[in-house]
Amino acid sequence: MSALAYKFKDALYLNITNICPCACTFCLRNDMEAIGDADTLWLEREPSAEDVIAAIRSYEPLDTYSEVVFCGFGEPFSAYDVMIEVARWLKTQGVKHVRVNTNGLGELVVGRPLAAELAGLIDELSVSLNAPDAQTYEDLCVPEFGPESFQAVLDFVKTAKEYVPQLTLSVVDFLDVDEIQRCSDIAQSLELPLRVRQFS
Image (cartoon, rainbow, N blue to C red; front, side, top):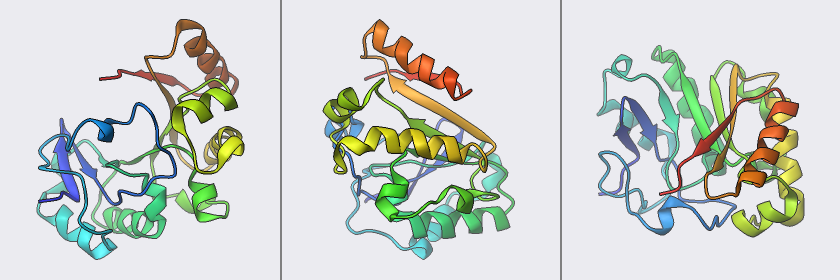
């Protein structure tokens, strides 16, 4: 059965879409079916907010988790309305820390500025930078928006800093040392931490 919610370590994760504007060469879904206690993260259909909330209820009480994270086999901003409605509901349930793992292309996906709409609903963004420049990003992430994608990620991050309390950039560790250092320089210029994710 496809999972809309799944437990991984001490957090509850929400798999709200399989749609993504990228086809990253290193994406976990290229090689695996599921993570954590899920049977499969491949969805039979795109869920509604009500579907996701019903799945969350099977994992109550929510205060037993360190955080609730929008992260599955798709880009959460590709189901933006669902994400926001569920995040709003989570806040009514007293969830203190809501994180979104994102490729940072949500504003291109939705077609408007979004950062201000996250205020009070999203406590942390983990944004996949994944490359030190536009060409490398296009080669690795194959974004449907083409060459403008890398700059769109940077622009989103700069604005989101004003509205989201915690923001982290990340890269995958198969980049070479020079590329990771250049990503670190970008993160430093934005006054943000950089996390190097293990490629497995």
